[in-house]
Length: 387
Image 1: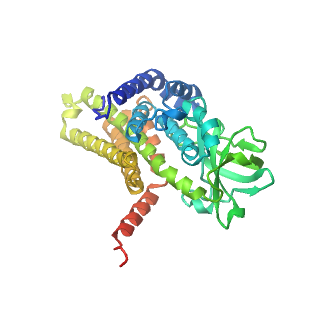
Image 2: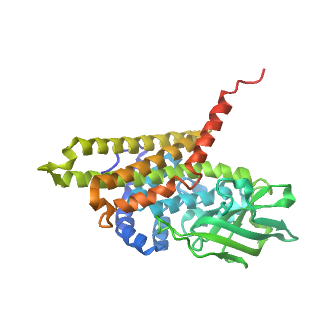
Image 3: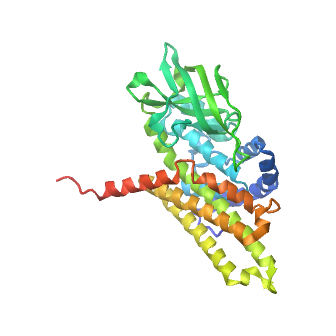
C-alpha cells in the first residue's frame, strides 16, 4: 500500500512520485528473475542515473540533486520496496561518492564529482577485509609511497559492486604516515594490478554482486589520494554514519513490501469460512508488523533530519540501523508465517524478503557493533564536565 509521507516541499513530493513510477516500471518487473539468475542489473542503475536518482543528496553545482538527506532516504526506501538489491546499490554509490564530496580537493570535486553523482558512473566502497570486518583498524592492505604516488598491495573483501563499479573509494594502511595510519584513495579498475575476485555466493541480495578486490602492486597516482594522508579513519567512520541510514531505509522498504504481501494474502485467503485477516491470531501479527515498520521509518527520519540540521547524528544513525534491520528481519519472518506453506515456496516473494533481510543485520557494522556504539555514546554523554 502507498506510504503516507510528510515531505518538506512540492518538489520532494514530485521526486517521490517519479521514483515510484520508475520503480514500478523498471525495478519491480525485473527483481524476481534477476535475483534467481544472480544477475547484476547495470542497466537499471543507468536508468536511475539518467533520472537523477544517483546523486540526490549532493550539491546541484556538482551535478547532484541538492536534496535533504531525509528526502533522499525516502527515495531509497521506495526503491527497496520494489527491489532491495538496487536500493542497496544506490546507498553504496552514495557512500562511495561521499569521500570526494566531503574531503576532495577543488580539482577532484571539479573533475571527478560531476560524473560520479551525475549517474553515468557507478561507485563502490572498499573498506572491509576478510579478517577486519568491524575492526577497521586491523586492516592489512597497504599503500607505500613512491616518487609518483603510492603502490598498493593486499586484498579487500565484501565489496558491493565489486567487478562492476567504475570507481572504488578504497581505504589502505599507509605506514609511512605513522604506525597504523589509514588513507583513502580513488581507484579505478583500469589501473594495472587491480582485479576483482569471483563473486561471493550469498543467501540473499543475489542481484547485488559482492566480491573481494585484489591489489597486486597497483601504482596509484598522487592525485588519487582523497583527503590528507593518514587521516582516512575519520573519512571512513564519518561516511559510515550516513551509510547506516541508507541501510536503514533499505530495510524499511523491504519490510514494508513484506507487510504488503502479508496483508494482501491475509485478506484473500480464507480459513474456517472467513479471511484469515479476521482471525485475531493473524490480525494481531499484522498489527505488530505494521508497528515495527512505521517505528523503524520514524527512527531513520529522526536521524536524517539531525544530519540535515547539521547536528551530531552518529548515535541516532546506529539506533536507526539497529531498529530498522531488526524490524526487517522480524517482519519478513512473520510474513512467511502469515502465508504459511505458501510463504516457504518461491511462488511468493516472502521467502526472498526473509533471506534478504538477514544480511542487513550484518553489513555497515553488525547490530552487535551498533549496540556497542550506542552504549559508548550514552556513557560518554553521562560523564559530567570537568570542573
